[in-house]
Image (tube, rainbow, N blue to C red; front, side, top):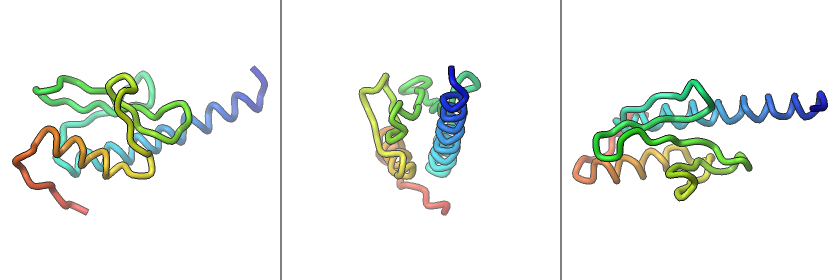
Length: 99
């Protein structure tokens, strides 16, 4: 691997990690049980109805993906992902607004 490729991969990993951290903050504000993966930049949502669900950033760096890539949402809107999960898991509970 060339030096430039190594630097690019490290920067990409750092950006993905930053995106996942922002996503985790939004998921937590929405009242979800969330953690981070030690193995790779990923958020883990835990809920009895769905079990642990891994959310990562796709290879383009443009989308959060989950359910093995079946579901995706733009990384520029981590609050939107949190709304999707909140509304799916807690349909009768109003959204929290802890901005």
